[in-house]
Length: 439
Image (cartoon, helix red, strand yellow):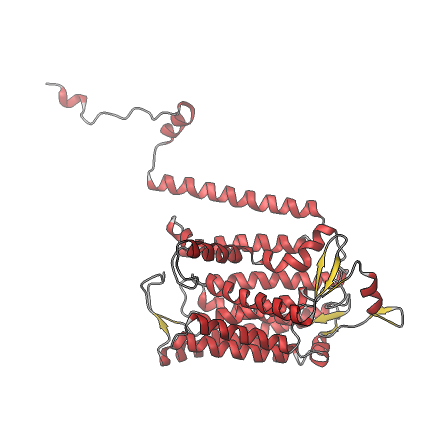
């Protein structure tokens, strides 16, 4: 492991003819509006492919008996097919195929094996997920399959190479062995995080869509204004493989939400959840793990290479960490299912299924885009947005609670007024009538 004290050596090694930064692997020409158009094409193709493939996935689920029935820890009330991950896989393949025909991504396919690595690793994870959704797989076997998929990505070059530590330490260049180990751990962690959060209709697809959108904005804008370092992005004029993958993931998630939002007509199953987790991790590792020298402030630099993927998925990561600690404390197996996840607790305290999902969306979006904005916007602006977002959530929660109480126990306006100023309830009329007591 090599520790560099500053950006000078890395910048010098990235220069060609002493003038221009070297074009890294996995990038291609970026053409302003044309690049945005091409990203939208990838997104749209993935979306349409999922829309077309999901009915077929439902039919396959019914044919092989891969159906989730109500009961136990499940919150749905009708039998629901669970092989929707097949449709998500089809959407990702369609998005990559479309990108291979677009000039913006020429460099991605010409100078890197990232697309091939993603396709092969996705095939491994989909096969594992299908076996699990149809027949069931033990936790150790599932973990072994996840490590195999992550190892496939590393074998094709998808690996963390640098870690930037603000201050005197600077950029740490990871050895291949350490980079591979950290990459596998990160990918497996992300796979299981998304898998564990998939407990309500539309929850996993929506949160992954939010995370991919935030990371796509971060990578694209950071590459254009020089916030990111040279190893992965190379500066303005370059398109990257993470952008391709994020665009395809966004389209696939949006298309699947048409069928998966409450009430869902199909579930993604472990096939879709593990696939989305792996894709998000692979793109994040490629984008963040190749950053040489972030060019923002020390605070922004700390968040850019190390914490952005965690902060973007802060809600599911927190839920997963708390779930693991809770199960270990109670002596239960880490992979044992229960109904004590954050989204389950939201329903327990009175929120509807849709409202619980929307609350998770809101907090995920707020934290994701704040995490991204730290590296791109002035810190006071980011803090103002965070405080405003938290305040808005608190005001809405308080208003909703008051309205629910009033609907449950309506009182007259005079009683509210008296209680507000006197802190005591107004006198209630006696049960008997004075007229009845008269002779």
